[in-house]
Length: 390
Image: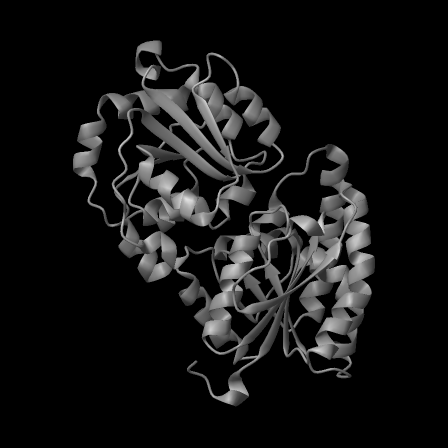
C-alpha cells in the first residue's frame, strides 16, 4: 500500500448484474481487487438469482447481494425495492466514502443523491457507464422501455452525481450527443486483462485446427453467424477443423444443441474458470470476434479481443472502429469484409490454407501492448487519481 491514510477510501461498487450468472462480474472483481491493492477498502453490491450458486471471491473485497426472482422485469423491480433499503444500510454501517454506481441501480439511490445535493451527507457519488446499456433488448417493448428509462435517468444523473466514468471515450461522446448532456468531471477506465493472461504462453498441440470464441454468449455478438459460417467452408477443409465455444448466456441452449448434431464441428465447453480459458486460448489456432456492427459494440472496450491479443493469437474480427483504432499496432488482427457468414467463411478458409504464411507475419507483440495500456492495475490508478479531484 502506497497511499497516506487520509487518501485511502472506502469504495462501494453498485452494479445491477447477477453474481451467479453474468460474466461481467469478473471485471468488477478485478477492479475492486486492484483498488484494494493500492490502499482502498472495497465493497461490491449486486443481485443474484440463486444465492446457492454464488462462489465466494477470494479477493480482498466485501461482497453483498440481493436475491431476485428470475423473471426479467420483475427482477428489476425487486432489485430496486430491496436496494432502496439495503444500500443506505451498507453505506452508513460501513462508513463508505465513495459510491460508484451504474445507471441501472440509480433509481434505488435517488434519495441518497438528493441528500448529497442538499449537503446532508458527504458521500461522493460517481456514475459509471459500461457498454451493456447500449445493447438491444430481446423485444420491442423492452427496447422501448429502455429508451424511455435512459432518457430520463441520464438527464437526472447528469445533475445529481459528483463525477462520471466511462468505458471508452467514444461511449462518452455518444451519450452526450444522443441525450444532450455534458459530463465535465469524468474519466475513462476501460476493460482490462488480468495478470494471469500475461503469464508465459504454453505450447499446446492439437490434432485439429481449433477456431475459438469465448465469453458472454448473447445476441449481438455474432456467435450464431460464426456457427453458420462453418457450414459454408469446403468439406475437405472442415474435416480437420473444430469450432470451440466457451461461456455462458442466453444462447447457451442453442449452441449446445448445435454441438450435439452428428455433422457438427462445434465443441461447446460451457462456462470455464480463468485458467481453463487461458489454456483453451493457447490451444487455439485462431480466435474469432464476430460482433454485430452496432453502436454498443463500436463504443465498447472489447475484453475478449484483449485476452486474445495478450496471448499473441491470430485474430479474425468484425471491422469495428474501436478495434481498428485501439489495436492498429497489433499485426495479428485481421478483419472480415462483412460479418455475414459467407465472408466469415471466406476469411477462415483463406487463413487455414495459408496458415504458415500468417504465422510468419506474426511478431508476437500482443502481450506488450496489453501490459502498457490494458491491465487492471492501470485502470485502478486512473480511478484513484480521479477520486483525488472530487
